[in-house]
Amino acid sequence: MHLFGLAADMDLILALAAKHDIPVIEDNAQSIGASYHGRKTGSMGRAGCLSFYPARIWGPTATRE
Image (cartoon, rainbow, N blue to C red; front, side):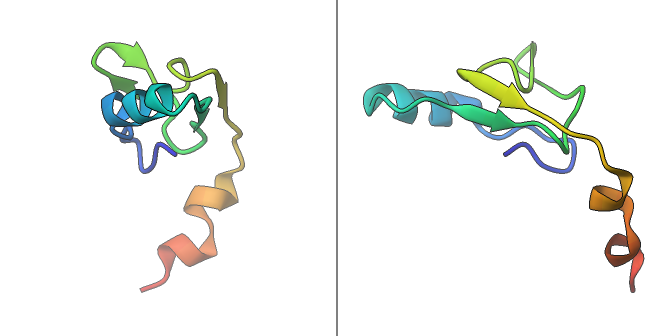
């Protein structure tokens, strides 16, 4: 999962997945538009998914002190 606008360490993830023949599905919901070494997040695995629901990131729990 890419989180807070930052990409996960895809070099490590993709290498481990290739070694064990595991497909990578990227959750890009919280990093839409981010990139990793020049590639857009959500485009490096077998599949990428995203959604946009404002309360998920910016809802009441995100603003509590």
